[in-house]
Image 1 (cartoon, rainbow, N blue to C red):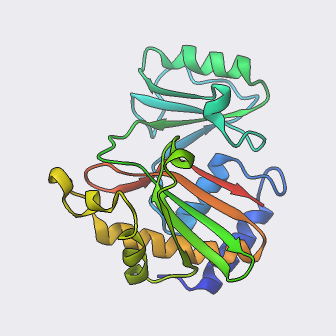
Image 2 (cartoon, rainbow, N blue to C red):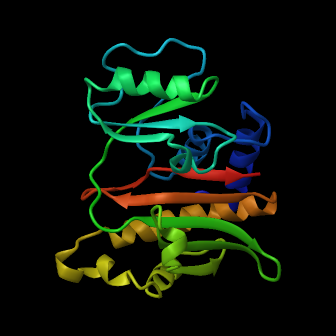
Length: 229
């Protein structure tokens, strides 16, 4: 696993390459997560001003998830900027509609992935007393309603991440509740890696979120991420 110093260097290089200084979009946030060793699915960035694809897109397969990819919009669902389950036949129409509604903005295209069990959220924040911290809990669009989260100082070890997970109400799904089967050790490792990135990010005054992090039945995947610098 990389050291905290490695993650600081990664963050600094990433910030210098942002299209809009200080305002990363989802594509850029996911590339940061990928560089940190977190499991990010293949995404295709359709840049504003470039022709939209008129047919299959290499690297992704139907059904698709199509999203607005804007540094100015943190909550894409609230503005109708997310369309899921798009078929190959529907893709051109959906892309054209989003381009018309959000002119001048990038779009992000990825394959839909199966989700087995609840979605998770990870967050990086700086506590005014204790310093850098990492959060893990129940995610998805209702994360603020669930408020089923636990915290640890960052960075944390995989073992400490495991203890944090036991504090969650949804913890039983990670250990076989009603036949559920998830890679608990893999999730601990992801939280530990994210906590290293959290330590570097919060030292710069940044906030990071992964929501959702999902189990597909064979692997964990980061489906969305946000960063506020």
